[in-house]
Each structure stands twice: as C-alpha cells, then as structure tokens.
Figure 1 (cartoon, rainbow, N blue to C red):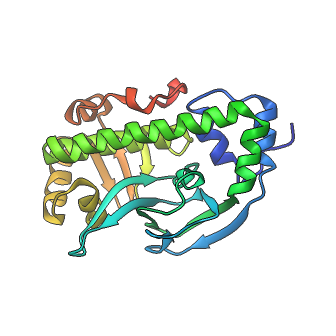
Figure 2: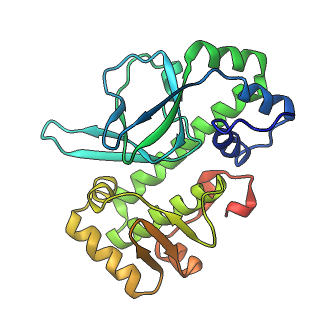
Length: 246
C-alpha cells in the first residue's frame, strides 16, 4: 500500500492499538476526505447544543470533553489525544450534550458524517471497530467516575497519569516513560474534582516519592510499577491489543 498519509497515521495507530487492521482497511481510512484546521488553545471544537454534521479527528494536540455547571464550574470528563475521534457519537446523537475544547493549539481533521457512514457500510469490520472504540471510551468514563467519586486525591492523580502514559504510548508518543503533558494545574483540577492547591500538593508528593519528575510540560515516570500501585491502576479497561503499550 502507499505510504500512510500524515494526517491519518494517528488514527491508524489508535485503531491498531485496539484491533488489527487489514491493508484494505488502512487504505480506506487514508481515502477519507479531511478538512484540516488548526484551532488555538482554549477554544471550543464543538459546543454543547450544537448539531454537527462532521466528526473531528485530533491529528496533533490535546483536547478535553467537558460540561459547565450553572455556577460556571467546569468538569472535564476526559482528555483526548492524537488519533482520537472524540465526537463519534454525533453520528447518532444529533445534539451535543457537552462541549469539546482544545487545551493547546490543535491540528484537527474534520470528516463529514456521510463519508464515515459510507466507510462503515463498505467496511463492516471498521464499523465494528469504531463501535469497539466507543465502548472503550465508556469504560474510561466508568473509571473516571470511580476516580472522582471514591479515590483519594493522590490516587486520582496517579491513576490519571498512568492512563495518559498508556494511551500516549499506544499511539507512539512516549519514549522511555517520558511524555508531553501540556495540561495546566487548573485543568487537572477540573478533571480530578480537586482544587488547584491540592493538585500542586499531590504532584509534589509524587515527585518527593520519586515516582515522577517534571520539567515544564515534560513528565517522566521514574517508577512505573510504583505509580501504578499508587494509582490502583489496572489497564484492562483500555482493552489494548498492542501489548507493548502496557
């Protein structure tokens, strides 16, 4: 097959982390019509109440799914990375019941709903694979509910860092337990349901325990087994077939 298009390589890596792709399926993904757009940090990709006619593939960057309460408090419900299509459910749910926003400048590829439906009709196994990806996303939500609802702050943070490392490694964005984490302490607070001050304190604890080190947005896991233990982290819920990511 031809060389992988640079704007679909992330999607192919993501899908191959949860199932094997045939050459014809990779080729079909490469033929998807993409409308490329770069969006600045802290902007909505799609907003609650919108009725989108296309889905968004994150080519590069970091994004989040969130809702805002009547009092203006944001709850981040998931982080999204290169290779994710976080609004795939808009194929079947016409009105967005949450917002997707950028955390840093993001390169995005928008794919019309009709073209995704056509892809699924012509390649039933890809249809199954996108459904599998949606089910895995639901499994991630369940873990986040447990994290915010029942785990102490230190465990919440360790669990989140473990999840991000594994997901980023699955799309080949981790080298020797080092990855870019361009997320502010305020954004971590919105994801974990704790204050900015508490986020700072917990990160200091993990550093003092020599579980992680951090320089700017670069985070290194110094003790992977120790961080997994601290976060009560079991990657089963990510349902990866790419074992080298675990």
